[in-house]
Length: 204
Image (cartoon, rainbow, N blue to C red):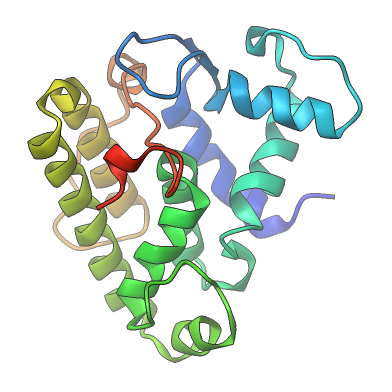
């Protein structure tokens, strides 16, 4: 049975993921409700199921994939409310490994990607509101640096920043009360960023 905090966080993420997209410049490729064809193939194989088009993904499958792949691995279950949403949304958009590193940087832990006892202690000792500000600022800095390094990805910058600013508003950061409302047109072009180790061009 899904965790209550996961169920509370999922609607925000899903409304930004939209439906089926296959943007030619999106490194994630064919994607439906934020689940790429590759992720869907891997998940169904682990369940002993035949592969099928991600266009046909079912709602229950979407929930199970998000919880098992993007909520539990980056340890959203150990985080305070609001910080758990920031971690979850980042894991979905940028991969669990990158989300852990951003969280570690925000709470003053070594950004090694290993959510171990030292990171857990740093999380427990942090002031969540301050950590969220640092986390979101680091995520924005990553997007902007990525576009500077790879100008062809500039088509996605508006969508990435709209999503991030909407997240800032959702978790109550001052100054983002008037962040743009969700726009389905923008959501269709919010590319998934490969996780750490998936594509060296995104690791810096």
